[in-house]
Length: 276
Image 1 (cartoon, rainbow, N blue to C red):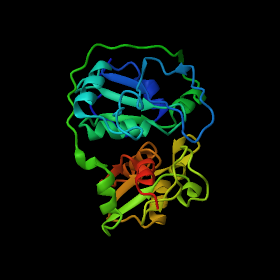
Image 2 (cartoon, one colour):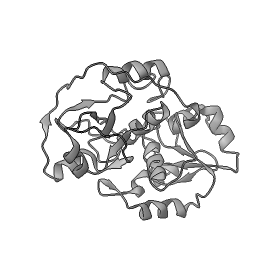
Image 3 (tube, rainbow, N blue to C red):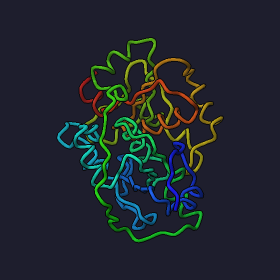
Image 4 (cartoon, helix red, strand yellow):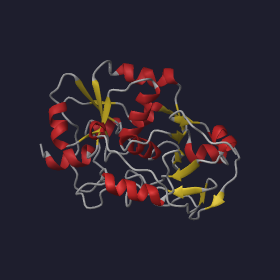
């Protein structure tokens, strides 16, 4: 089978079905439980040849005080090699919600210098609805890869950065949480975390970029960004803990925006450290 040399950041389930046996293709299931959901059940099936990409327990700094914190360059390299990732690999990542945690993986790889990665549009629900083959979850191990990470610090914002960004007229902080969480109308799902939002931030709920399980058209995505008048500013994406902020980052990428970063700690950090 052929190898893939370049890929768009979003691919359809039809595309993956047609390329699933290509030589350099790796498929990752990045499913994780939503903090806003009371359901802890996970899907018992996966796309054939998938490997589990554990954001929370492997591809995060588990010693950090807040969840899903970006890991070190060394840790990312070590764990990526364990999954068989080579410099010439092509990666497709999906999750069992449609579009949720898979975008975080796409963003992490870009931040660590790997660009030939795409999110599966609609994820596992779309794959299932198309009637494509599934397999019972299992560990599809690969030979050790040769990818070496090179971390781009500019792709993430941290607490001190975000305090500066909130006062910088050339920066626009966009929060991906629901409107009611952003406005502090409903309590935060994390126990003990206060409600509210970062000063001078605006809101695009990540679900606004979706239609069903998939992304809206580029025109539909652009319309959402136009509603908050996002023009030439540096866009800083935030959410609850750095997961769905990456959905906004992917949406921005799809419509050609490049001047962006993700607030890694997001509201979980900001709301904990700033108490009023």
